[in-house]
Length: 205
Ligand SMILES: [Fe+2]
Ligand SMILES: [Fe+2]
Image (cartoon, rainbow, N blue to C red; front, top):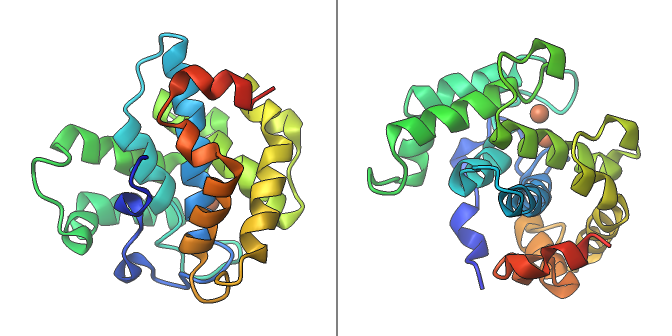
């Protein structure tokens, strides 16, 4: 099975609250959905960098100053990555991600906040992040499926609600949201299915 904790955002990344509504629970669920959407796109012949998708998923909200309206948190995150903050906080070795990938992660984090019409280029990786982030709006009761961009995301709304609900029901959720989402996603089978992309289309039906 894919190593879940490889993508755990370090606590030092967070400017605000790793245990809040934009904390590690949200990061984990966005990691799940963005990975599924990325694999689905790859099945259709779209070139998608899975490492860029997954790191963007877990980092995109770590530089929030608070959980309210903070329109610069994406740009702040992009600058932090470009300045070496991400590499330093995770002890990344040069062999793990190259400069092009780091720039792509910074790009996704920067542009996940503005509306699609303002984005310079909707890369496949940014598309994965935006739809996965939108799916986890179920935790806020604010998901409008008309705004989802991919067919797979539109088919995953009920699963997104289920993962959100079951992760928050885990006994460890209050202490460690990341582990709670891991347990819930493994019990749903969604995380293990990422090892076998041939089975992904069954998940969305
Ligand atoms: Fe955000
Ligand atoms: Fe987010």
